[in-house]
Amino acid sequence: MSVPGSISEDAPVASAWGGPVPLQRTQSASNVPVVRLSVAVVAALLTLFILWDAFQTIVLSRRVVRRFTPTRAFYRLLWTPWRAVARRLPEGNRRESLLTVFGPLSLLLLIALWALGLIVSFALLHWGLGSQLLDAHGASGFGVDPYMSGTTFVTLGLGDVTPPTSIARLLTVLESGMGFAFLALVIG
Image (tube, rainbow, N blue to C red; front, side):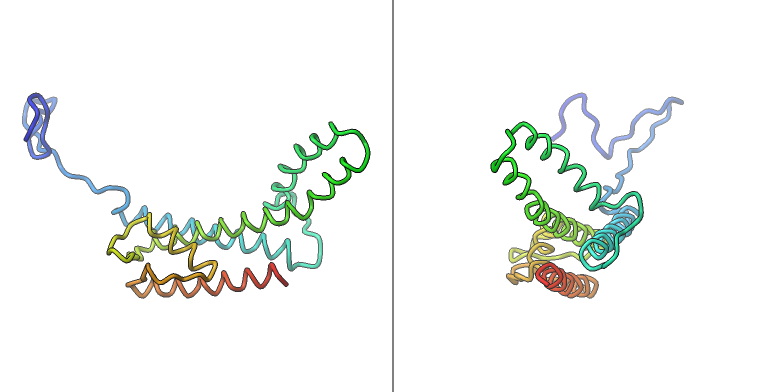
């Protein structure tokens, strides 16, 4: 049913030169292979970026001399307000306790941020490479990808989302292995 005065998708529209021009259906961005491939490339680069930063921060025994590292930016961003709050407290045990908690708490937050970044990047990889993940009800789409990525990365693997394509299975194996290695790296 069309509303009076509205234009249907199949109806011709008058052009500036007076002749009718038929409207054409366009593809959504999620169906354009170039967009999906671009997202997959960005996701792969994000994964490598996060892994390299974690390696330099946790494993590398020497100090990194580059001016910008994500970890350095993270600590500078958090340390400034934390220090400002601590300076408002009178000198003594309370102030020292607040400053003492910063190190371990910020490290846990940094590890959680890396894990979240890897989960999001693998979800984007699944979407960008067209993994077509299916949940228990047969639904697929980007809403399923982060859920699958999260349960795979933390090696929970409930089995309610299945990877039907070869690329989806490969990404699932890579992500579960990376999640297991990341957990071992953090614990070790």
